[in-house]
Length: 87
Image (cartoon, rainbow, N blue to C red):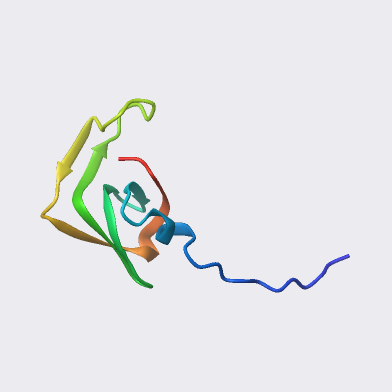
């Protein structure tokens, strides 16, 4: 049997739950890391941002090759494939 279930929007989930934390964002072409300081419907704002060219082993802390970006960096939500608390 198939049922129709009402979908509820829960505040503070997903990216919003990571505000103020250091995260890593996997996008279509690049990987970004930094402190998540802003979220809206179209983009996120990272401070102390880096573009990651080589992660190295994910079991180790830090990245093998990550280059600093200018102070604040915006990433389009539409390009994000996955994200999590790791930087």
